[in-house]
Structures are given as structure tokens and as C-alpha cells.
Length: 173
Image (cartoon, rainbow, N blue to C red; front, side):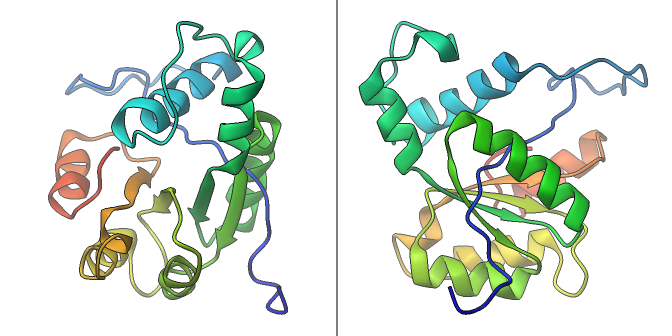
């Protein structure tokens, strides 16, 4: 692209250890690649119906056809923190995903209108228009643009943050 604000790289999402809990676990634990891939694979296979689920849940055992399908998925990573973009995109690149990056919600909406992403990871604390407001603007677009699966990226793990994201039009937290 002539605009150097978008880079083609894959991505990874970080989420709380206890997704269905109201409490916060303050202990640190390593995030393993198989867990992250399994979560992304489940979203792509079951929630978005983008790829067909296979019996194998291990990244190393996926068929070449599924790996090719995964590489064709278009994912948009939206974050105004360059380090977060670098870390997340590098991790997802290792999975084989195609990931574009946007450093603001305005760029994210512009890119989504142009390229129709299969999945969007949206930071909540963007400068200017925040992630929830950007999600609501995406939901106002015509189909199929308004139906893209959007997952919140945040360091917040409070139940009210999750409810705010889901009520704001996001599909997952």
C-alpha cells in the first residue's frame, strides 16, 4: 500500500485466564501458543464459519487444506500502541494469519470498508474514537461489513468491561 500505516502481518489476542469468572486473577502465568491458536481456531471455525472444524485441535496436526484456509483469513488488528501491534502481529504471523494493522479507529473503519476483514481485534482504549465507538460505527455499515466478528483487546478484566464490550456490539472479550 502507498499508505505506510497499514502493515501486512498476522495477530494474537490475549485474554483473561478465567473467562467466566467475576474475579480477577492477579497471578502471572505464561500464555502458550497452542491455547491461543485453539481459541482463534474455534472462533474462525464455529463462530464465523470461515473454516470447517476438524477433529485435530493441535496446530501441528492440522491438514494442509485447513492451514491454507487459515492463511487466507483476513484479520485487522486495531491498536494505537506500536509495541502491542508488534507483539500481537508477530505472534499471529507465526500462526500463518494475514493481518493488517490500523493505528486508529478511523483507519480501521476505512480499511474495513476497503478490504472486508473476516475478523477484527479492537483495542478499547484508542485515542480519539475508542474501540466500542468504532465497533458501533462498523455495526452501522451495510451488510456484510457490519457482520464482521469483533473481539476486544484490553488489559481490563472486570465483568463490567466485558458487558460494556458486548453491549457495544463486540462479539467477544
